[in-house]
Image (cartoon, rainbow, N blue to C red; front, side):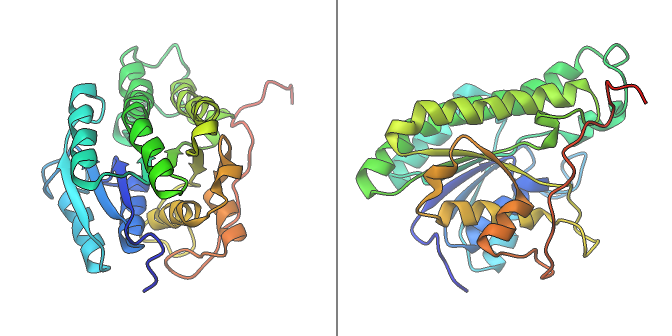
Length: 274
């Protein structure tokens, strides 16, 4: 199997399940030594399926190398230690994928109006993903700048967001959280423009592992690998792309060999009168 990212190092925050799992598996399969961050180390420990040990097993089955680190990705001190470890052990960082999100905490409140939604969903939906991306990117940036200077490459930060960042989807709190992370993509790209580090948002269009004609988790992973393998990725910095857009442009398919089209970019509700 082709290893376009051989010799490179990646960190995936939120690698136990969902898009983060698919991204970690594909980065590892593409040859990057992939540090996988998440709360659940062993199968059966968490409230939902998925664990770091299962993600690592998938990577290794595809001939890749993964490192599991159980942690709270919203704890700045813990992340500081992890990024220092990567600096010490690897002396480089080529890819950071921010994919921390708690679908389980959001699910009970889908389609609720904002005044019906519990106040603490702000912490569990907005803070969780946006804060993790902020902390991880802060720690990643200095090492990525050094990597760009030392190796003449373009390191890449990927934020997993979605249409909810620009259109109404599920509920207000979901959109606020996705918008906060999406804005980080744009503004961090401006800060990093002169340092040779790209920041891009990837938009999945829903995930499933068992229906062969919808996006799987690994389709988003292949989008990230395509971006990380592109020597001209800097021209995409500060922008968002559907995984399906990138599939069409770079020519990759989903794991069942099928392709996808971008989802509709519309609000679930309209301010216009019918």
